[in-house]
Length: 435
Image (cartoon, rainbow, N blue to C red):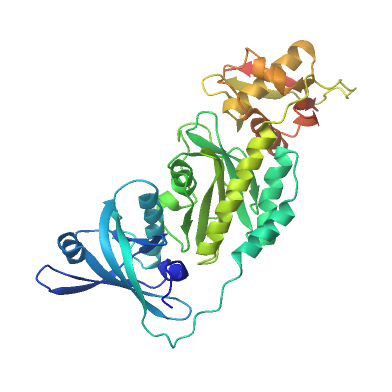
């Protein structure tokens, strides 16, 4: 029985360069290495187009090629007979291969030479096992079993904050992932913000990534998983990812300085992008094709859960206030800048955007009336919040604000008192100033 293209996916990670053979119209043969042979679907692959070589000249004139790929662990060789169809220079396939090539180039010391110009798509006409006597490599751990264990650990969640934390912790139990973060799409649709992280010395809650920037931003913009299995020095795919406005205050992303394997998976609900799940490892080739497939399923499940929990009805009224000790000690200087809704406490940057505007409104309400108990419904109607319709992002912004305060400014805290209800807690007096 001829091998299927799906069974050859371990051969297509770039660990061992493929060889591509073509011929000119007069029959003159040419053999060269291919940087990347990418699995597109059960009938198609894509080859990286980096420069106008003899191979590409031949294919454009005579659209047939033969590619030999090697399974890294067993060294089995397979020959693929291909028919050239088209070249894609943008879009999901191009962006995925561009990210993959960055890892392959760095691993081979060719980071300054390799630059993807296009993804050449071919139909696979035939597959030949060159030496059937060689035994296949041992099967990798079952990704479906990993996914099942992950779901089992995730369990049922009726709270967005708990879901975010358990969604990441479950990855350790199922996939052995020890470093990951969950980023959600903001109200503008142009950036993502970190809501939770796993395994880092700093949580990075509130860190932002613009759509299209870095691995996380590309996965979000194209709504595709992007996986790199080798260390890359390419800045675009490194830990130092961009933010929407580099000149504004920022919170660093809590990522590894030198990851050797990375994967970013979109969280979706139907056609809607909810966010991105990002994971990384210091080991090469940590994420398999099967892991990618399983994490895509997990991402869709999380996307649906986030949307469902955010849509649950809130309690109509704030909780009843409880007695609390009067704040004491030196006043905290809280400064607010309306142009980006950023908040600084004792000259240290705390938060900005929607979360910053919410915090400033709560602190001013407390200063004016002594109120400490609030609910989501009134925030959505509050005319002092110069913001677009919150939709179902309000709860996640409150979680972000709560976690950022706990991490950077414990004297100010938000305590959940019910569904969509919370209490402002202060242990020190405040001095409010608008910039």
